[in-house]
Image (cartoon, rainbow, N blue to C red):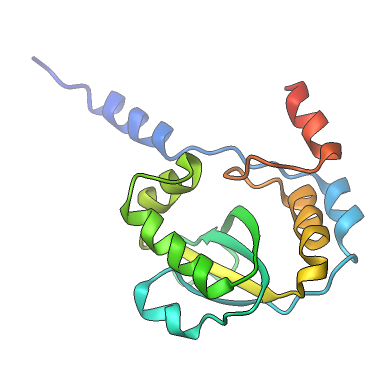
Amino acid sequence: MSVDILDQERNEMKMHSHNFVLWKRKWEEHRELHTLNWQFCKLADTERASIPLNSGIYTLIIQPGIASHPACSYLIYVGQTKSLNRRFGEYLNERQNETGRPKISYWLRLYPNHTWFYFSLVSREYLDDVEDSLLCAYMPPANDRFPATVRRVINAF
C-alpha cells in the first residue's frame, strides 16, 4: 500500500485553513468608536495572576511567532466578561476539556502554544456596545453571535 505524501500534506493544510473576513468599510465605520488600552499575555497557567478581576473586552489571538514578526497575528474571537481573570481561567480549562463551545475548544486545542489573550478594561455599562463594534469590524471566525447588521450579511452566504 502506497501513501501519497502530497495527499497527507493537503489534508493537513486543510485542517489549518480558516476563513477571515477583511471588510474595509466595517473597519472604517468602527475605527473611532472606542479607544481601548490593550494588554496581553500568552494563554498559560503562569499568566493568570497578571489578569485583573475587572470587567472588560478580550480577544483571542493566534500568533505563530515566526522570526519575531510583530504583526503576524490572527484575531479569532471577541468577547466580553464581568471578570477578565475568571474568563481567562475558563479558557485554560476549556483548552484541556472537550466540553464547552466547540469552535473555541477547537482553536484552543489546535494552537495551544500560540494563543494569546488580549484584554482591555471596560466598564460594564459599555461592554455590549464595545463588543458589538469589534464584532462588526473584525467578524472573527470563532464567534457565533453577531449584531443584526452583520448577521444578515453572514446569513446571506
